[in-house]
Amino acid sequence: MFDKECCFTNIYQLNCFITVCRYMSFTKAANQLTISQQGISKIISRMEEELDVPLFIRKNARLELTEYGKLFLQSSLNILKEYNSITEQIAVMKAHNSVSISLYVPMGMMHLFPIDAINEYSSIHPEIDLCIQQATDIECEEALVNGQADLAFCSLPLDTTVFTLHSRKSYPVRFLMSERNPLSRLKAISVDKLKKERFITIDAKNKCGDDFNRRCEKAGFRPNIFMRTYDLAMIMNTCLKNSGISFCLGENYDVPKGLVLVPEDPPAYWECALVTLVHRELGPAVKELINYLNS
Image (tube, rainbow, N blue to C red; front, top):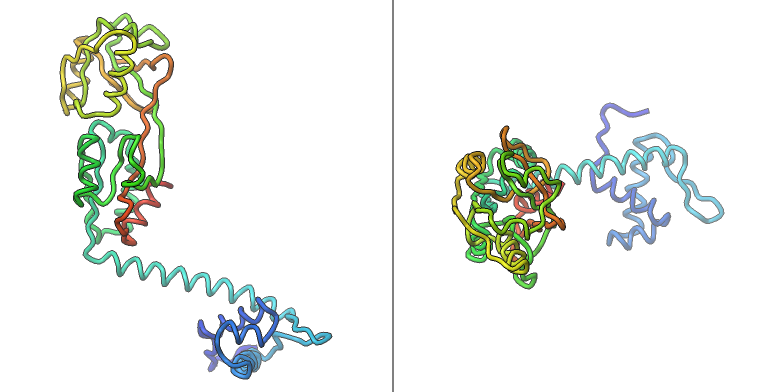
């Protein structure tokens, strides 16, 4: 059917054919494509000549696809879809050249971070310099405002006139403690049972910690902060020695032997979101990274 010398099909011609199929009218298709009716008729006639089959027939003054036309339409749509996908990928690749992305994550929250998505993104785009920085809650917000970060995971609530929330997640708060601590045998712990406990925290500037402090004050006491540190190994070892208890967020978290995680009663949650600035235009590389992190 096809002449090996033929190479009639270009994207413009396919688009003309698809547009005629959409309207089933040469006149309407020509108006949509801003060409003459004679011009689009010639394009379709040329395609039919090279295919050596009719694509359309006129039936009762109406245009209809032949069986050949129906087959060719489906193939044309697939080709155009693939072409558009390729051009988008090329545009993203061009935009990625010499691109660096700075992503901020709150201290102590890396175990909640979608590292698999990051690894996949980095393997596809090795040309992108992706830097992940740990910081306090406040520092994550300040980094966005100051232009140090392109995007960040931030604790909620946030001022949505300043920040755009691309996704929201909620993680249960649990207490990390030695199995020698009598509280470890409870299925859940109410805040009022923690009056005599010593706490090891990540940092004073922590919204999750601030929320816990408010719950303690509501129960009539201030928590005894025994240690503040960024060193997670230090936190684990201190809890293991039964010298204090700490917080842990999330459900799928492996702890060393001798430590247990007990949920709060009633359940408390840490809410966070992947965030950018409202008025900052995002480049294609950052947009694609957001899609990966949200998938």
